[in-house]
Amino acid sequence: MAIAIAIVIIVVASVLFHFVSPWWATPLASNWKQMDDTLTITLVITGIFFIVINLFIAYIVWRYRHREGARAAYQPENSKLELWLIAGTTLGIAWASRWNRSVCSGWKTPRPPSSRRASG
Image 1 (cartoon, one colour):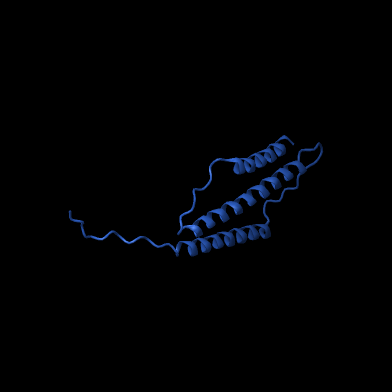
Image 2 (cartoon, helix red, strand yellow):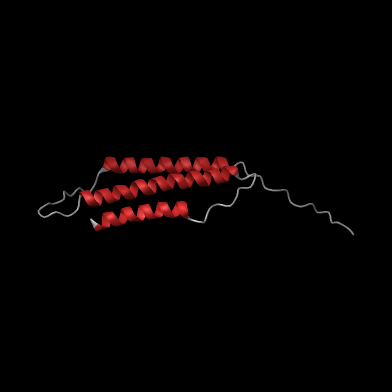
């Protein structure tokens, strides 16, 4: 029970720290809006997953805590669940890669300085 409470406290403290933290992204440059949007989307998605997964873990720790006389059922493999987890992770990474590729393809490197010298 103490571990479940500690996990919830860590989640709440992390979210509060994010919103009251003095460290934020610097003002965006005129040609970097897509990159800033990508960073924001990444932070939001990972933040949502952080909150949901940790609160789920806290719930599971609380729900299936030790009770006298209770015994867990041992299931070494679950092929269907493993397939769903691998497919979901693969699709998430593919989507993030595609998004990043579309953002990075718009980058334009500045022209190199001219080779002429100023004479004075």
